[in-house]
Length: 255
Ligand code: KIV
Image (cartoon, rainbow, N blue to C red; front, side, top):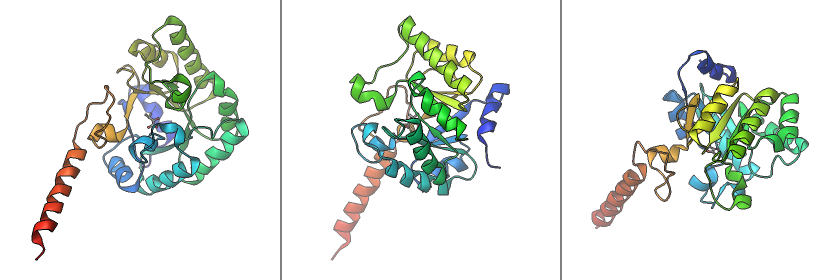
């Protein structure tokens, strides 16, 4: 049976924690869906792990649309979420136009980064009936302003701002929120303070669920893996081994 965004709320009534992952193409989305993942995010992390960009700020809406359509073909059951990429939700009008395109491509909801600073965009999306997943904490689309990836919520002020943002998103009507790279006590406090599911990444186990970039989970991007991701496979090594064996076969089997 297809999961609905509303079904994510079951975790709040004692249901199991949400197991969620990223996928950017048909076979991975289908494998994840068939393995029982609750929510599949076509994340703009595809900029790094699929397209080879330095960070997510280079990802375009056209690229997100292309990958959302591919993932949609593989997903029958899980909730499918598409990321609004950098600079595609600068104004409420632009946010609605961009989000509508991802929904046309098959996303069940869109995710956007930020709290109070994107309140007008969140209001416009919700007024337009577009389901939203929030994203607070370390925001990869801010890398150029901030200069480095830093865990959030260390100071009391920063923790209070995060809590305030989370309560605002909840009040505005977002369906769930990702809490990325923040001190676990802050993620736990937010989870206790809001009515919607929280999905953590590098934010401890006090959230309602977890998300990982699938490449980090399966060891498919050997050049970088964040410290909080514990790979459960080494796909990069399997590929290298298979390719080396093939190269060897071809070179030794020709007359
Ligand atoms: O783009 C992405 O994959 C994400 C997850 C890390 C939450 O936003």
